[in-house]
Image (cartoon, rainbow over all chains, first blue to last red; front, side, top):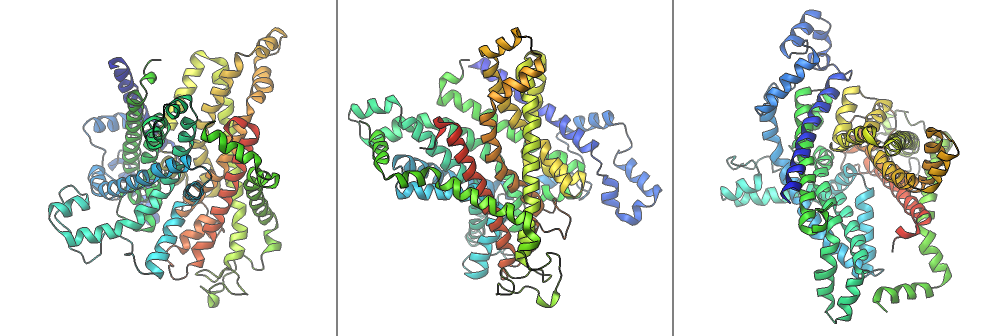
Length: 337
Length: 289
């Protein structure tokens, strides 16, 4: 077990390091020119300005030198300074990340709490109405564009029925609690500010639902398929022959064996929520990492793009690592290879 | 007899027409939707009554009426005509990303599995490396760096698209290469390239075809998403994702963003149904129960 752990950690670490090289190469070999993107046409037509700009941001150094500088900064937890906002990238990310973490976590919990029971019910009562509901939900979730779903929800519940608050994280006139964690819900509880907490929760409902849709669809579908598979196994027949009650057979015998594909997918889905967040946050004016990623990409802000792709790749690798570890708990056979 | 077996038996006894519908209904419906969009892409000038780029500010933001079946947008352009024309870019982008990605990935994965040894190690680590990035974020960064334009967006998507095919092709070829017909081909003196591309890969092509059909909807969805973010087409090209973006703040004029979104939804669902159908047909073991 320990050897398995060590080799997995080492691979994960090597992958993160290689990932930085890839990001760096992509950021530096594509034809987009940050000098032109930032300076504007007038200043960019003046070679003196362009030269000064390149010297200031180190764009005139050879590429390997710049990679070493990047790695050195990384070792200190320093991602450099954003060309667009003129602030340390890490500060930017610290400002924007909590809003996304809050949104992603809530919608992940939502999709698990609905998706797994729905998938189990659909498998147990195959071809009943609940199976059709589950199939329909997962079909819409997988096929509908997130950005369009966000628009429909906003138009329906805010524009027409007026039962949901508009875009944004809270009402513009609300008093924000002092920033402790940056996670608005937790900060509100810490400051005992129930009114703002209520408002923030109301603002979370629509974006969290939209973001959950795709994940919910995948989790429902996978749970259903995995449950059907394990319900048809011999040990389930044995359990039935022993006269065990049906809920015990389903939850105690079939479910644990169906969990591996669900966990694999769930881990990936959580990491993928950031992608969905880019679209959702655009429609809901959510001040999160998704918006920030998009803005940096459009303004060819290399330090910011590199930091974000690095962090996201690291999170991706870390989640995959945790998923692999959970195999060892869920199915000890996975370790013996 | 287990409950599952009884249910299967009950399904067998259902009328032949219901059985036929259950088996072929959804793939057929999906196929019809896709045919419709193909027709729209080819016949857009005939099917639409307006020029998709014709600006008519006096008639802007008209709700759906007999004159404009799906209303007009903020510049008075006919939404129906733009939706019909929009099918062109979506289909082209979806097919080119998936086909080129699949061919590239299959060749790389096939070579890796066939050659084994160091080449395999190198190619598969490269695949893992690309796979450890969230695909859309990486595509977004590349698309932004390359500059806006349909071709650039397709290139950006290709960079992140091929690895899953490389992985699948590798696992498929690994199974095939230990078969006896490969040995026989060696003995008969065929070259490596001939064996790999003319014998091994054609034998392993089934799951790849399934993956391609199931993937087409996904590629169209991602392209529309990038386009929604402003990283896809150059305005005023009619494209579904960009049209939703143009209408996203018009909550009262819901028709501007709703119909292009429905178009994306229908085409993606169509490909999913057809993909499921092809999978059931090629691989009866995976048949959805």
